[in-house]
Image (cartoon, rainbow, N blue to C red; front, side, top):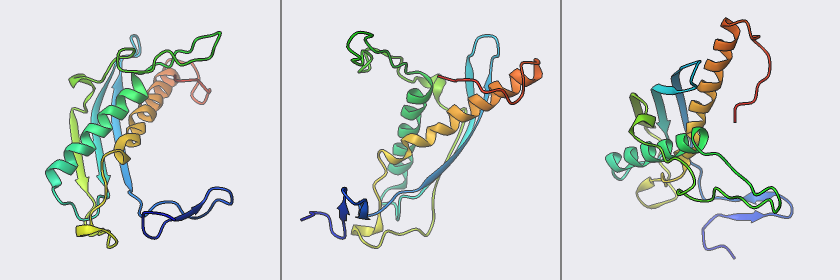
Length: 166
């Protein structure tokens, strides 16, 4: 039996409802890159996040900003290093990688809470907001990749050629 109402997920068949509710969000980021050094600046990020009826919009916006910046670190600063003989992940904590700082926050950072999207199945029609915005930072990763693609095209390196950004 599930402790959460209306959740009945069967992992064997892939049928049912795995979560009580879903959180949705969208982000768009604009970046500039230094084609010689690879340094980047996040010029602007816009986020719209579904938090249901927010209990405290200031706290929710802070949570969204924090998760997004943490995700920027994950997408752009962390490097996964594995032990070649055992395959064990060596970079497994904040002592092993650069944590995002003030320079990794978008210069123009706009966060909006989706209006009129109550979650009628929970107290005060709210939704959890801690981790869902984390992956919205992928907009920075893909903006950087597109900026590099354009820099490569303008320097004659090919416009549609595949390249790995890792």
